[in-house]
Length: 86
Image (cartoon, rainbow, N blue to C red; front, side):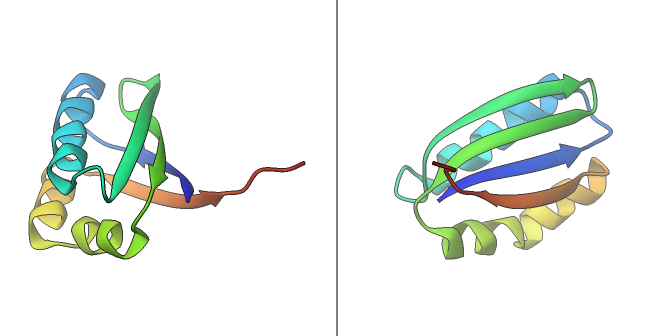
């Protein structure tokens, strides 16, 4: 499923991109096959992902490790499913 996550955070965009890229890589290609960051500003990102296992992604995003990172970086995410309009 194509997914858009709009995130706001207090860390720099570069730090956010590095940490979230590591998080996605750790999940593996069987969960997220491809992703791309779009920098909106220094504290906001749009993350486009092709999610193959939404349950696994949700489990990881609500893990204690993810919650701690979110709290430390004042991160708030809004998640959207994207469908092709023909």
